[in-house]
Length: 509
View 1 (tube, helix red, strand yellow):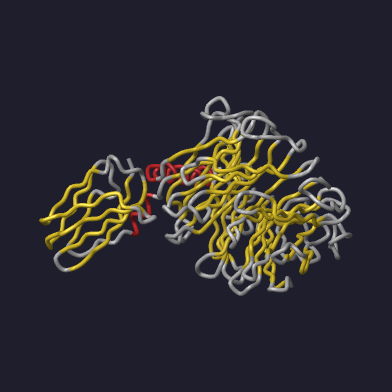
View 2 (view 1 turned 90 degrees about the vertical axis):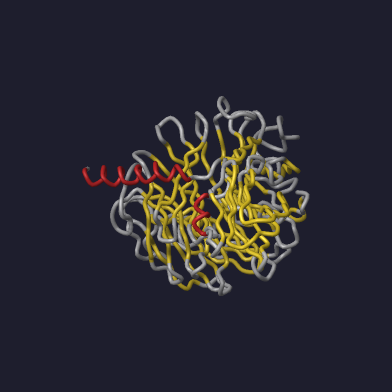
């Protein structure tokens, strides 16, 4: 107990210090109707905006119709959070989307599950099927595919591959239809599609119990990395740490044809699960999920469940792992490497047994805590997806029940999209040019430029290249007001008598 208290105290102390440098919320938007909306995935688009996918049960508010009890709902947002278009898709039964990304043609590919056999969902194979849908850049359905067998099957992750096709991961309970082999109960099911959605190959992996794939990415060698959760300790699964009905994270590496190259079971004697996996710049992987153990591969336990973040080498060896949590319940749903080689993680933190909030954690390249931020309203707010944005900030999506405390809330549960400003720790990457200084940085109301060489002109642009300030200068010093500049990262270009120098500036009011 003393050890647990010490670990929790250290984490809390670090978190309290880190909170001072966490980025601020630039804006948030609640999207939905009077019933339930749950956002599963968000991505920044090529135009600087955002695409969000999930499910809805509403037929009012921001929803224009009701195809069934629940439908997939895709929302395109501008960079400032304005809704540009909305697309309700599905059939007469329940439909969900869990994964979406923009495709090379400017449209979108999404994956989820459906019970339907009509409208936008064709050829149900039985029970719950995988549902893959291609949208154009305005949200209209280009093509739609149902994949599966006679039992329940669910797609959880999709991405476009280098050949213009798609790789999809999820689970299958079937041994018929599109599924050629079932290893026992539920399996990881991996499907390769061409650009038109035609099935090229499919593979099942698992053991005699339940195995769920939650994330897949194409690797630099043309293969695939898959992460999820396993109850099995036989078949394709070896090294499982759990026993008596508990789970491990399960990571599998496939070659370009979908054949198994290696597998790793990660965890301890209790419950662990992987919800996200992404490639890292060193050729390895970052995995995020949850843990209930304090032994095996897991270094500590703070509550019922904790964030568990694991850095893997290219061969699947653990390079480091971090447990992050408090006394109750935390689950990480998404992680990504950031431009400063650190990592951003998101999920929820349940501070009491009554409500939960978005919990955003920034780690450095070694897995040490840089900052953390808790955000939300008075009820349950659970974040499921995060991505770093081009302005060095972050976009987050999830769901909110805080209708009484978050403005613009429409009903019971809404999509909740939150935009954070630039990461203040990015300032640590700013180099000081010899003979030139800019202070303070970050700036609030004013900056002072000083140069050993006479300055001729100064230009400020935002990260998109848009000019926000220009001045002709004659001298070695210049003060510039930043009160009218929005929070964000800027480039300061100074022309001197002998050349040009550029400096990064972070504005944070």
